[in-house]
Length: 161
Image 1: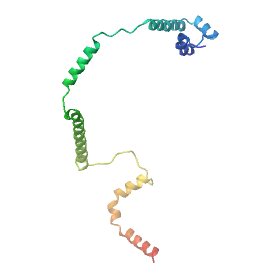
Image 2: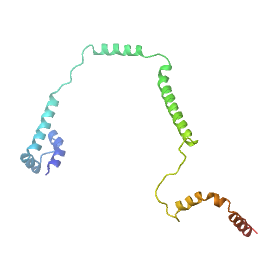
Image 3: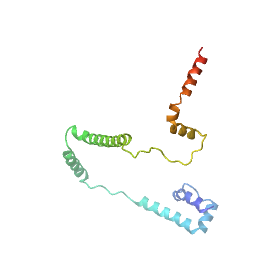
Image 4: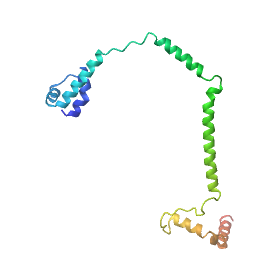
């Protein structure tokens, strides 16, 4: 067996839940590290078995109740005490949202540097992006080109006689 397999089984062996087989026993006899860890776990468990929780002071309850009364007296009274923090949080988040909205609005209304395009590299003609860029660049030319409008009218008349 390997040390990793033994280490996974050490807690069970220390509690006595897993019997130590011949192969495990042989590994524990030859591996000082694994046998040391097993003995360390057993020693810790025996210390925990001997440990007893200390008894609380006889005046613990009296002092605890007095402290509770002091804290209750410090707490502000009324409905305003429980609503104050949420109202402040909502006001702060509203102010932040308003500031972000104003910043976005100012950016969209012309307070930027003019060019809104992003350079992504050369655009190949014949692609969808290239065609859209050509249409955008030559918008004035195409808008004044009356032949295209006449073709649409002719197509509509032949389709609907």
